[in-house]
Image (cartoon, rainbow, N blue to C red; front, side, top):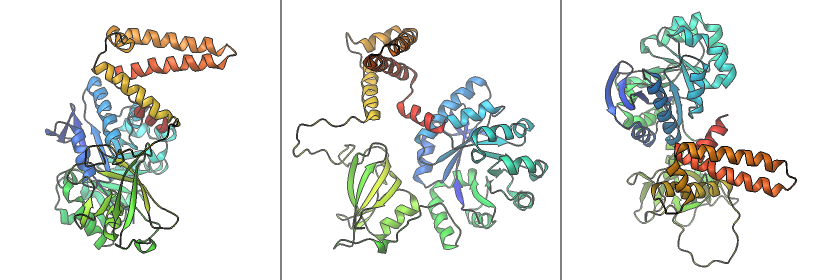
Length: 428
């Protein structure tokens, strides 16, 4: 039996989230708000369907998809508006973990082999209404598709008869207590559609029901039981919390058994509050959730190191980290973190754009506009080439630094972040 997933959808139409593929009633004007809502309620993945009708709308939708993938702590699956391989490339390069081919379109069936070989079978899904299309294209599906999305919940048995691939079922109107019956089918690996969208705040309760009925769900698996830890006199284990991107120490808190198990179940850091004597889901009131990236025990098994993705700030004072009261410090040169240096320079450039400073060269570039920025970037690129012919490597260093500065001005002008760049490189 496959692990079961709860997967809400975002139907993206003219920058808004609408009711469905056949219903353009707006349900949310800002799709990113839905992303946060779905994550906070323990969705396992998010599907985004691009319903744009023109090339211009499609490009805007891809930009929104990038923002959705950037904000989401769970995998985003993109579909809609796929006509050729380039469209699949746009979806995957936007940050989606997978792309959905629409098997009601012969053109999508025709490009299956090409896109699968290009991007990998594990990144390709196919959605369909009629199981016949799967049986008619069984050779292509079995070889080049990793899983399926059945848009017709009445055809579950027929689908299982024609393929051994796992498939998600899109359901738009069913009682919640019927979902367990759907999950009882061994080939079903998830449920999506408006039944999940409309009841997203019930996902954790539904997961609890699955656990009670021995239905496997998505959760963090621990190599150690709670009994493996050496507890303090109060029965708790201290947890040191780090930002997984920068390794900055954010806070220290404590866990009991219930907090530990809830963290594994939800993927969100849960602690035991010693002052309130109660369980404490970090971010439940502030929205500043901590999504688990890893949990590691120390050599004595009496402390946990948690690396997390921090939403907002960690400290109740509004500071990013709880550690800001400097006690003493020696004069020393901290080693430069390359990405942090880039981010700091970028922050200065962003600030110049928002708060112009008289005599600032950066503001001069912004005032002159994109053509001037591009001209300077081209000139600096040429300077790198010339410097590279010189035996003195320092000249290359200087010219690359100039080039990177002008490149960052361009990035700010076009709204591109370093995270966008590093994510793009990682996706490749």
